[in-house]
Image 1 (cartoon, rainbow over the protein chains, first blue to last red):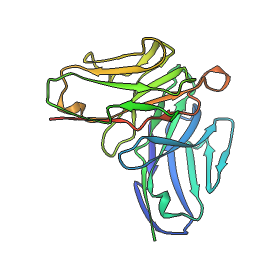
Image 2 (image 1 turned 60 degrees about the vertical axis):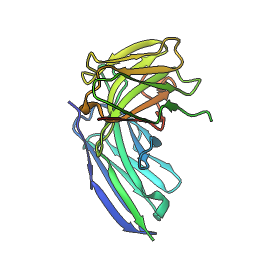
Image 3 (image 1 turned 180 degrees about the horizontal axis):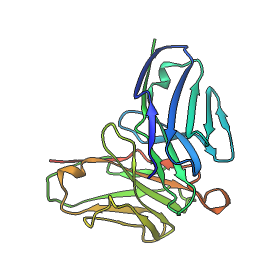
Length: 114
Length: 118
């Protein structure tokens, strides 16, 4: 059974700091990995999707890397801003057995302070 | 607005009552998913449709839960005889056909329907 773990569970940083969020998964037979952002009481917004054949994806100040062999992904946020405050979730889609479903981690709650 | 919409956004009900949630996906997306999220946890997969066909259901989806997508457009999720443990955010998402016709592809979520069972 795939398990997804995110560390840290919560993080508070001053504005402007660069930061790294970590995601690990137990089964490396994945099809892709996605990072999502969730604001309190809201739905999820897709940030980056990395196919299993890719090593990283970038969008603006965000960069996500994937190391399938070690079962890890990192989300790098450059020059953090208060508007980045949210919960960040990673999710993996398994490679075989059908399903077309994502297994999510429990998220990292980020607070960027002025 | 061309995103995924869910209705109602909030529902408070008494234990034992039935509730129904509706999801309207992005119009050109043929895949529709239902997830459930409890406080402090990540979403958990419940079920998904490709067009009108329900292709997979999680073990989390007990016989009190039923989901439909009758014409391959909007979907409904009904919970019968609600229990306090059903209190959660119910999230709907849609996606186009994934890369090379499989996989989730990028997932677009609605704002969710929060259920509170008293």
